[in-house]
Length: 429
Picture (spheres, rainbow, N blue to C red):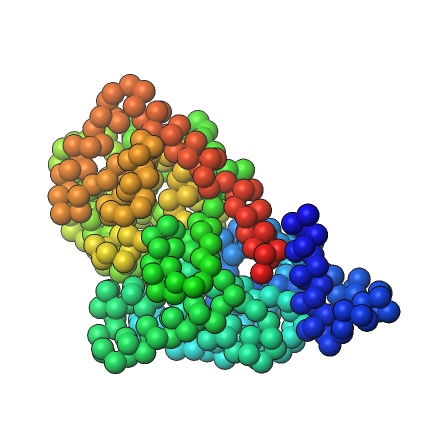
């Protein structure tokens, strides 16, 4: 019955959008059948595919809709100088020539965001018959494009919030001008209020948005654990030899190497483990603005127990994950960063790894509640050596935590379950 009511509401939306009355539905049956295919625009400047590596949540979301019969158009950007269109499995991806790099400074990033808004608005004119727009932040400014599309083409939008902006750049010290910050907060509320609904990636983000726009529905759809791709598995001895970690307990950080990630603490943990002569090897796998500085610091400290690995695609990450015992999620000590939903956390859960974090918030509460990891005080790197030691020497303790990780992934964050929840959003608008 609910599906029938949703279908009627969708028919009504399509008819009104195309200038047909309810009466004419009986006259123009072939046209109505044609109109039944739902077309969804996804705006995401940082869209990635599994082959390219990086965060692929938006790929999963597009696939979830396309696999269920919807027509999906993704508008994104790339670092090339020409527009490019391609078919990714069963949906379209349109790449705009807008350069972006994690090494960019604040002004260069801001200019990249503005260029993407302008390009996306122009590109959408080719898809003005779309039924819905799904706009993914960051940046917050993608909401400007979504609002314009709604005003110009009457396409309702859902706004996804992965990080609270402008809270993040304000607390990180990138935005210091009070007037500018005030304008961004007003823009944030306007984007939330204009959207037909909002998707939050964490309980903390959901609560924050609900406190700012009390009359708006905020759905919680966190990042996904790909339990089909990652999974608990014995260490591949060929990979163990390749990475040079035979007989070592491996702690890996996999992700962006930027200011927000606070990886100086990760180096301090490696140094503390070296001094304590623990059989641990550390990996930093990724790239970003601070990669060169961190490599220099590691060399000065003589951290032979730490290896830097280049950015890798999903298959490459899976190899690193295979030899990993514990996944480390690290952030700079800024309160707003505790609200996030980092991909590396969910990959670690799916792969069945011990989870180590250096920040508070909802993830700290969760891993402590299920017993799949532990928190380290970022002001005290020797606490890492004290807390990690039992997992090295007490039989069964590591396996118990790793099993708890995988169970949490399957029960709360499985891609199959969250994909269905995402698809259901478009039946209730």
